[in-house]
Amino acid sequence: MLTDSLNYPKRCYSFWVEFLRLSKAAQRLGVHPVTLRLWADSGKIPVTWVGRERRFSSVDVEAMKVSSVGGDRIRLEGLYVRVSGSTGQESSLQAQEAELRATATGEAVKVFRDRGSGLREDRPGLNRLLQAVTEGSVTVIRVTHEDRLARFGVGWLERLFAVHGVGLEVLHPKRSGGRQELLEDFISLVTTFAGRLYGMRSQEARRRLLMESGQCPSVGGDA
Image 1 (spheres, helix red, strand yellow):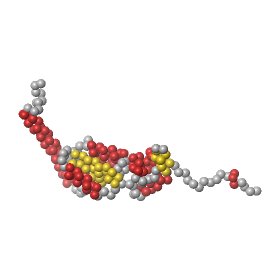
Image 2 (image 1 turned 120 degrees about the vertical axis):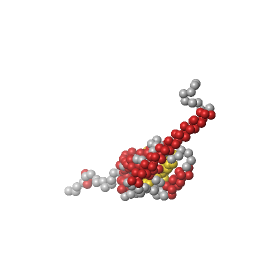
Image 3 (image 1 turned 90 degrees about the vertical axis):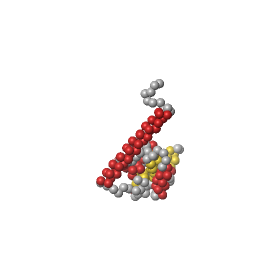
């Protein structure tokens, strides 16, 4: 008696391909959705459009995971430059940026600029840099010297970057340590506070001259 093969289920030798939304694909890859969007825009990973939504093949996502482990991660550089003065020193900003661009090994996608002390925490350029790090729109931050990023606390910033998978590269790293590093920190503090004190004295002197010339009313004077 012949067995009717139609009574048995057919074996399927193909594998299931899932098309993932942007957020789910980014989660599997361990990157920010903005980073995955940049990869798709640059052709790093194929994308399928379903209406106005991006979809990513589970096969392509797994392949990207393998290539990322192998060190083939796309390099998106954020360049940070800073000068201490609020005016002038344009040539120094341009020189820092030019040196970083000349030594770039990836795409310099963003440049963050600040004019102000490295002790300030409310620098506009630094705030934009931190936002880019958390969004995943950069994969490495590069500076010419460590103190361009901050006078103190660079290690904390570096650990924060690492949480978001972003590296920090210093073109000219410090080679001093121990007493020499402590001396440099002390000099930085003295220089910063001396500069602030000089600025306060200059402002007071200008105000006093204006008061003497009658161009500025004295504080607590007659109404």
